[in-house]
Image (cartoon, rainbow, N blue to C red; front, side, top):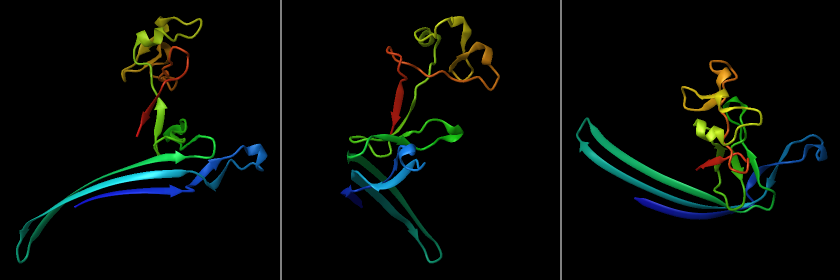
Length: 164
């Protein structure tokens, strides 16, 4: 059996961020905002392999794919959702974006990449590639300060990747 469905949801119920000092300290509010278009495809394949008096053997394979896109958002784009360890918010809500799109940083993985974005007053000799394949400060190896360095583009902005 296969199934294809399309739907449009208007006035999506979203937890929208607010400017706290204008709203008695509240940081967000649930609002009816935005339109989401959804396309769903599902496929099921089943088989009855054996049927005896005291034994039945059936199997099923199910595949589904759901794609949701924000087609209208009458508020400013925003990010939400925390990650383990308190890292940046990862879900991006923006008109034209896939609903549930996740964004994150790209990381410096070679000394050649690091040489292109050295901070003022630093030398490439102050950095190494750690055992996990990320560039870190050489004097931080084996300490809590052994942190991967975010990759920047030619304009100095952090590069981000998208996963959906």
